[in-house]
Length: 348
Image (cartoon, rainbow, N blue to C red; front, top):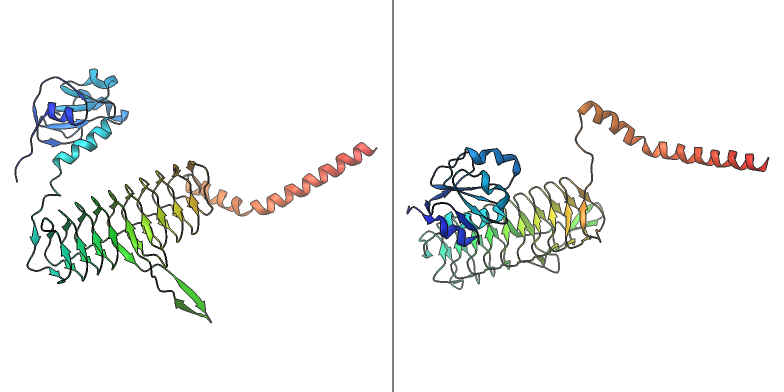
């Protein structure tokens, strides 16, 4: 593989930074602790400030307030972490692929495959599916009948797109993601369950990333919608008819029940759950392991559950928590008694 090399001045221009020191070649990115002289590193967390004096990195991305502590060269920027993110794309070779259809792939005769796309070994492209320009379809991935994948998107190995699913441009769908599976819809019928056919689909906008093992259910009637710029971590469950607003980010292990609408530019931390038929305001931030059981109408940070504490203390507090209703009733009775005694004292 051809080694990637960039002049430090090129990297500085990429992030609108100021190079301080020698203009040397950089061929990789590493942490402050592990970097070599051919690497660029960054400081975004003050806990690692002490490593600036010992790092072997050829160049370090820093704020102006930290530049004096850098022994070697520096690129001074407003946001080192964002600058690192932009530079990381220059060293990412995973998007490189050939063109055409591998001999072991199966493509329906009426599927549309752009000549610049690549269909990997064992992939299946079903009837009426559409694959856009420069799309990569990984090994053993299935693109269902009538599904579409927009230009410059990438489907990793073993992705499943059910029939009719629509993926926008520049999306990244990681392995084992399942998009368009049936929503969990059943009507009770004399002790049994009558399945409700899921007649909608899933529509995913541009610049969306879907993590490994994440599932997004098709809508019962209307579509499930993931708007542009949304970032979904691994192992997330999005139920039928959910709408996730643009540029929202959801961390691993979260579950969102049916027909809930999550607003724009929200963050939902890991292992959180949101019950169905709710609305979450734009700009809402939900902390880890929070259960959201009612709509959130005002943006802000929201949490639920109890904080970490020693187990023995937690057990005692858990018992007390179960006694809260009884204690509340006793307090109300005592308040009534106090009010009664106070009134009697005034009457005398």
